[in-house]
Image 1 (cartoon, rainbow, N blue to C red):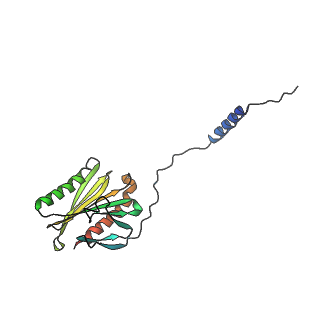
Image 2 (cartoon, rainbow, N blue to C red):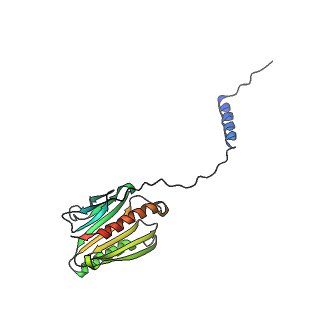
Length: 200
């Protein structure tokens, strides 16, 4: 007498699943190489930033948008954020007028402290002097290497009563290797800003 074999549905599903797992084992697995998203760099085109109420002007990239710093709109009308929109990075700009050497020393010390607070994570901090007697502009560029929140800071002064400062920050957590091409691209723009900077 023939008896039909019957399997519970759960057992049948387990058998089918086991057969699928065994057949998948024939495929060799290899780890994927680490990759980064493709970066599109805009064309280097510049326009002049010139605010009637501020004592400075410079040439900036057209893809970067100037916005008044919302935290200081009322009491510091010449403080801006230059937003490098395609790269989610911001150059924070501050501007001060001083009347005494002591006030200048205080501004310089503040700049120095803000830069060197990153020494814990920086591999190196290079100081590059800026000087141009004919245009009454001098200052310093601070290039920070390593996994720091900011990679470049600078200040400019007329050695009389005006002090302009910039600090670049990426708005998301970054890795030095992944942002290296972007940072180089933006650094060229910052050097262009410095080279075209004028007092009014």
